Length: 192
Image 1: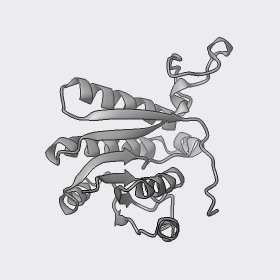
Image 2: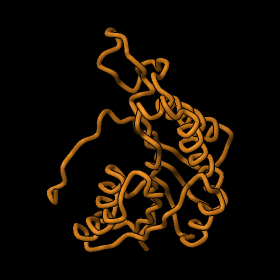
Image 3: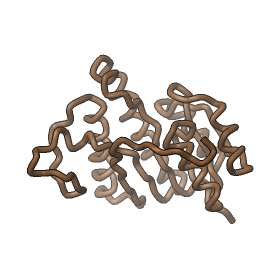
Image 4: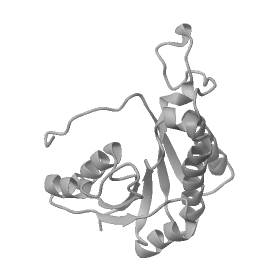
């Protein structure tokens, strides 16, 4: 039986490319996206590339009841790749509370639901913004580089979410986590 992975923000740039790779590797994918930063037509592109249209639910992850309904509808979800987030650094300076509410509450809802639905692990999409403005002596930046004060509310939400995940894992909950910190992700799929 194929494993099922929940991809949040799956119609975004990184999420859609990850969905393609997962489907081509034989996984079932359920995409959850509120479509605030993407378009439903992305599903057509995924289907054109892979021959498979992933399951899709338009859900705001801040809505815990709607999020739980996804787990109820797809009880075989084994893991989550969490890309969904408000992501514009400049906008986060103008609308900090929106960023804190969206990025943090969404993650907390997912984490709270994982044990209830026996979801084994989460991959969290973080950001290089957790390193702030590294000092020249700390370049190049590696995973061991010290965290500096983030320069935006967006960066703060990523750093806070990393800590929330670490604290939750250390509390003894039986889930695993991986955190990925991106530096300007770009790329072109042959279909582009």
